[in-house]
Length: 164
Figure 1 (tube, one colour):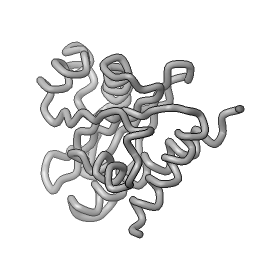
Figure 2 (cartoon, rainbow, N blue to C red):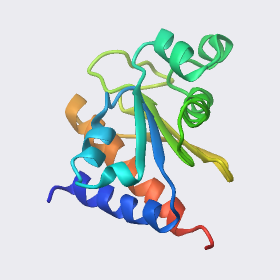
Figure 3 (cartoon, rainbow, N blue to C red):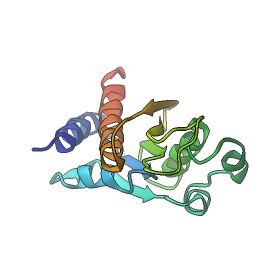
């Protein structure tokens, strides 16, 4: 079993224990997180849907991300990640949503947001919003793989830390 499948299995167990379903909004990972989850037989018990919103238009149209947020903070920002997670939750039947938006490279980076900058958010129907930014290294594939592993582990850790 590969690393992503192991992390997704752990997350699935945490979701099943709480009778939660997950939805995802992915940009730079392009569905890699959903792929890791759906490689597990029975994941339909705890995975509702995934949104791959690569363009800004998709973020606005599918997830209700504000154009003002995109213009002010950029697609790669914790504000945008938060709105992506909120929109995914609203447009699903899930109890928890996670989102990823970042710069996988090799181009597209800047001094303020270098290649490898990835913003994450997760929120639940009765869970507070959590946002964070991580800086990964390596080539495009490595950055996407690290971002996938990070959100799978972070969601599982967050659920494990909840009471009940």
